[in-house]
Length: 331
Image (cartoon, rainbow, N blue to C red; front, side, top):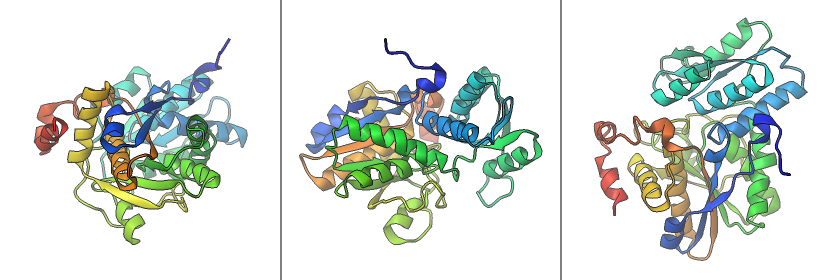
């Protein structure tokens, strides 16, 4: 029998899906790691598990304790599931500009959510800083701190990176991923670089993020207007991303990522969020630069069901000036 232990045991070992359209268009093998198949529905399941298990192992998280986190949604949802399964109390702080579906998911789980205004990171009322203060004020509480807690990165090193290497039998020429906390990119890049210095590591960065210019030009400055994509793109170098062996970066505008999401749905039957669109668009760019015959792996971060009222709402897209993306997806 092949039995896993509880919710945490179901996290990981997600398959690599060959993306037929992008592979055909580039002459490369482009694989997407299906992180939307994790039990809470996203790549953030891995970070949440790694953070909880590290806090338990080090004795910071005690039985019946509270886990506080500031999140764009997916990490909060994953932490909520894990806390419920292990007897902890989750307290989630979320900016008020995230999709309604994320709030609805947390409400369905019976989780306490503090909604705060979406403000710049330097503002004391940024969701990250509010979560830190709450954790200090609540007895027997820890702050998960997904951005700068390197248990996040280490979890991806031990699982995501190892699985990609195993499932490609080491035949991989490039890994492409976006960055929110930096955990996925930081952990996977370290693992793969230790196995082969020939593997190219590339950041795919949405518009409005500062990381593209940092890795290209050493300048931490935003490129373009704010993206509609939730959970990725950032204006600082987190502890999880610091010193990651990144070789290059590509800038992906919303028109390109949205068109990619719609094309993946129409051609591959994959219902994905816009972060996956950024990643696959980046993988296509990298495959084109490498030329035919190479293998490129990226991350399919989460499913599209959390974004139905926005990303899959044509009126909402039109309000953001993204009608051209829909036409581009048909080309």
